[in-house]
Length: 355
Image (cartoon, rainbow, N blue to C red; front, side):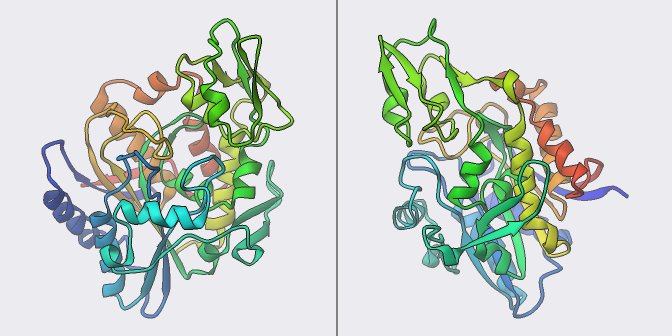
């Protein structure tokens, strides 16, 4: 049986009010939030955007989802986890402040904004999942404690996974910093010395102090490297990349195993929204205002995270007339995450798109 994916079209001329109206009709015209019951607690998982980034989902749209949840007399909170890399989202205090600056506050959303401090062990759950690559997953406990989970994702490109949507929002986004390290840990970048200019941009950005400039070339210490890929993202001449021949794709499979750790026991208590608006080459973690690589397409809603990501990908490739993600990241095959997620029974690649 095909999974249902609901869709409302949006174009570049639609203003925020028009998009809010379409989102409202999408929610009311689908069964996406109908599983929520009175007095239940709903975690709304999203990405608040790094400083200088504008691709994240607008607070006004998140408010609409939260209002619909509260209309069912349920409680909800909006949340994300801290990052591995340097920046204002690496600790809860600064992360909450940048979220507020981007419009994600209790006053704006009408519901609490919570970013757990994962240096406190009480906020982290260690789950024995015994999967192929991850045996024990470490995730933010509040997502497991909530009765229901609603994922709101900005679908866009990603430097390590080709693209990111509902599955990445959960798999990477619900992991503690230790969990994120476990997913990135064996993906050590290499420097192409014939291209490297020794500018030290990567050295300054590295959160693990794993990069030195030796003989005017960057050198990465694999013992210190945490595999976060910050150096790949900031290199101005594309002189750093992952040695894909030595284990390509494990980060995607680890990410899906982490998604399984969060979603497996919540079946029937899950909903997902993907925003195909300002589709960018890189994720919202990068502190820059990336241009669009595809036209604005619309918003999707589904109970199936695999189906909604596959439908999002198909709509973007069709509207663009080419594979914009493969063009942006030629060594990445984002379909690997979807195929593996289907294999772990997180959802189906076979879907019915309902406008």
